[in-house]
Image 1 (cartoon, rainbow, N blue to C red):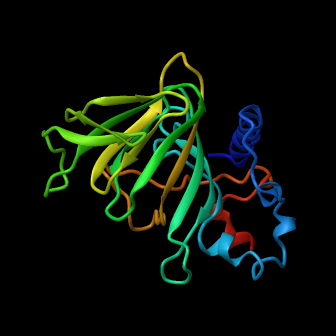
Image 2 (spheres, rainbow, N blue to C red; image 1 turned 120 degrees about the horizontal axis):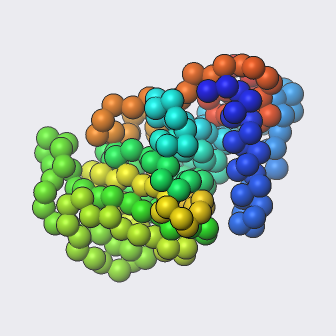
Length: 224
């Protein structure tokens, strides 16, 4: 992806956050120069990978298969006592986050506003394939039995708890608009705790056709 495209996606995300009355922390708007000399003070942000994040999952087509998000908080079980994480995401209509589960992380996915979020679900079996058995999920704390591969619709205000080993893919419902999606979870570690059903890429190759508007978490090593 071109840096200019990423910058424009971040601008559009800020506009949508404002529209949804969701406020980011002040450092979300720092320029690369603003980060100079701040590593020691901001070590938790940098080392625990807080901040802007964007992926096209190796698809080369962000709007078809991709996700932009901001990690607000995240612990590191090796270095601190924080055992939880929180993200805010923007999911476009029919924009897919591919089927995956987590070995360690348990999470709640929350529709914070906008359109409807569709989530396709399977439990995994011992071979980490799709189980064809019915299983139980909790939506806003209420138990519900669903079939393998069934889709759940989360309307604004609704949430679902995804346990370890539960395959899930999500996307915005066509015709309903972008979705503001929250995630509250155990500590997040994208480097070792994501099991995608089909192999995907994580960070896009960036063509630096202009300066970064705001740093992505994947930029920290280069700029800070």
